[in-house]
Image 1 (cartoon, rainbow, N blue to C red):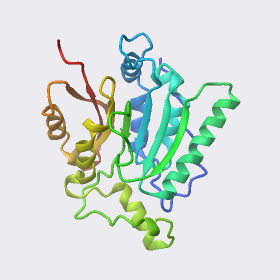
Image 2: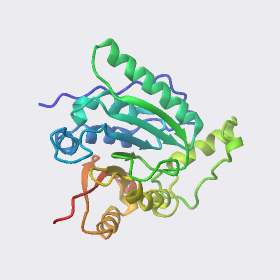
Image 3: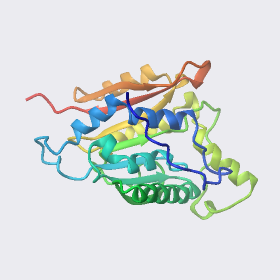
Image 4: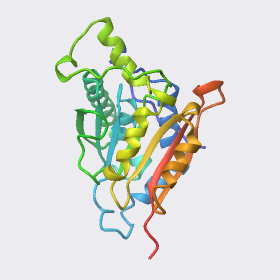
Length: 261
């Protein structure tokens, strides 16, 4: 029987302007720590793999960290999930408050591991940014994205840099909307991320975990990824319990395979 890894604490986070962990967050935790995904990640990042990059520390990036619960989970339990503790972790969020919350979540999770005399990854930091625009190409080994996936008539306004520290009901509501409002089919933000994915993932071992809901039309999304070329693979690796309407959730894993020589 597989032992469940504890969920990192987010009791320090003020959720008036930051997305609170919910079913989608916990589905990501369950998927990343399930036996099949641990086996996939351990094989992909094994020191024994005969590739030039296999010995370098895996770089794990979460786009849209929110409270930081998912990134803190990967950071704290790197050895259990990836099979090695020397991972580098970093986060990106367009919401400055979410970046600050993630930094504290990482500190709390790492402190808990230290007190238990257990290993953890190396946290590089969080960046205020729009999706992957602040990353160099080909550097990400594992990308995690819980996007704004709820279908909405329009996308919320992205605050200008000088506005990002503003407070008040309207500003807080807009920041929260950025975390869930996905525009047409709930896919406008995810579409942009998918367009960037072949550029930011590392060539030899890059992979991504992306959450979708039923109204995002997951089968169409997966076919789009297959159409990128023969080296690309995609499959559903996690599902939520049965629920009515768009709330049905799934996690897809996207990865490259070496070309046949």
